[in-house]
Length: 599
Image: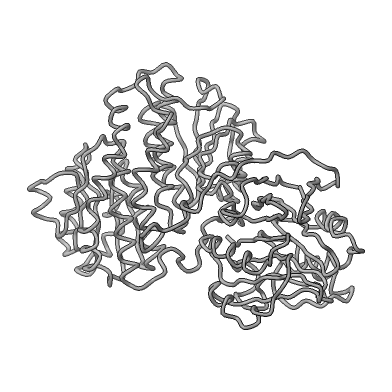
């Protein structure tokens, strides 16, 4: 959600900034802008819409300079417009700021500044930062920013440059910010993917830290102005990890990467003796597990509940992180609270984990982004190692999360002295091959999408381990095709949703041949009797099912615990093909952001 990048060095900044913005497009945005400093002052170009529009802007051709900052905005305060786009300036246009996050007390600050004579141009919360800096700036940017930050309530990842300064000053609180150390130049960005091919050394800023960047050196201070210790890490991502590799869209590429990403999640953790995880928590005394997530991560948490309870007999609760953090939830030191987040930066999930830690609960993170805020806050957990996920609609991170939760359940079981099922362990080891077989449904799913792309509504239904997959299938269709879709447990259909069934209502049933199979068949019959269109995802040919379903997609047969992994792939493909056939932007659906770093 929003993206920022900046550069200082001996090269022209403009092209580097635009390139960086393009690599941050997947985060979601509605406008963009850059500010470059040169001997004449600050040159600012902002535009509504895609970065392509910014590139085509005739004003950009005259922009020159070797210090610059840039931003992609996802509107929170103030509608999408050129004037509300970042960077924002002070009254004299001598200072420019880009900001991710939300300043919660901006309204009161704005009133004070307006009384002092400051003139605001935008409707954003971020502009108050520029005017506060103007108030305190006496030639030293860092000193001015250190006076401003204590006045701000909320979250920020921000950067500021000044007409009369040869530095960029950045600050972080609750919004990701990474520094890139080059050879005679420096970068910063909200995501390491923007730095690929430019640096190989990075530093993740911690909350309440600022950094002063110069072309050949830098310093990092805390909010009290004291120098802090920092860790320089290697940037391990290569350009190939963010390329499409011949696929039309990132989403399709990432769907087909799932055998590889699941294998990465298993590597080094699953062997003939069981499961090995680097979790430094005594799990023998855990009395309850609480799984937290948002969106797709919440769906993986629901599957985790089924799996952990099945394998460990420990009660599991699943909560939206955004609800958990504001509810008076009884939390005990015998609870294990698990934060699930692809980005590791989800604001609500991060705040929920902090709440759990305050109550002395044990915490672990299941994240994809190494050194992300949630990973560092938890201190221990499971990295997915799925590689960058560029498509806004999560696919490979979701299946990697499920894989990690299965491993966690098995690990808890082993730590508590319970016997492991060797047959299940063998099946888990074969998961990558099973996912390859599930991907073989691609052509059939594409034909299915042609038949149903013009549907106005959809219902997804499943039971047990596959009820959350029904929710996820509906979410994927909503996210990228903008078709209204709902997911339900199959048996709950007759408690209300069955009123929607007619000849124009497609119903997609997930019905593997497990202990719920006959029950799901009965639910299918109920829809069929009301002339609903039946699509079935199943794992083998069956006369009963084939006689009542209008369409059937086959996936490989697996252990029930693993069935969500093979069943979700046709649903991901279905959503993808429907959206693509409708001519929609599959990788960047409207109004959505990849990483939700604000409440």
